[in-house]
Length: 242
Image 1: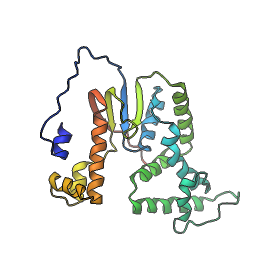
Image 2: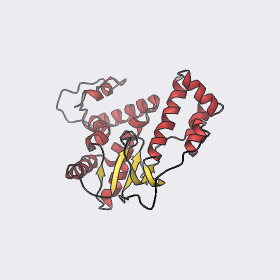
Image 3: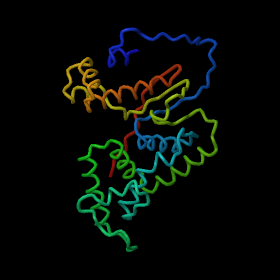
Image 4: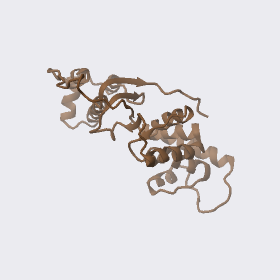
């Protein structure tokens, strides 16, 4: 109701007809992230704590961008055509067909150029994936293997991991939002939009920035309403990136 009133100008609050006393509980807690790559940090924490978990989507989708960046930076290798755009980054158009060992200079050059490319593109998902590959390096493959084993096992654990997009249509007793969702107020302020009324009017006129903000509002609403009983926000531990 707070989201709908604050960012959708809804006047009539929603009243639940559910009976909390008779409703069945699954005692599950779902951790929801905005981006795939952010989930890697939580997976690392859970593995360190030896806690079993299950992902809603195939873990390959969660790790693919971080691992693709790691393999390209370390070895100049592209195995998925989806990431061939990396080869076209200025000053990185190098021959990757040979099998010669890559030098530290090559690795540093690719790291710096990709970092600049991501900064210029303002791609949040790519930025997070870059941080994850810097932080965990070869560990990404280990985490992926563990997450995949749990996924195939279809573990009956009470810990569920999902992105907000994948969570649509699902419900759990408790939801914990990871702190990678954008601050809606800041988005509106940075877009120099006066208020929510103007935001919605611009979105109805297909203004690109306003439409993107409304999409973020809708996604946040989806994430919050996956919970039957409680919603919390978790701040992932920050490790210093190299």
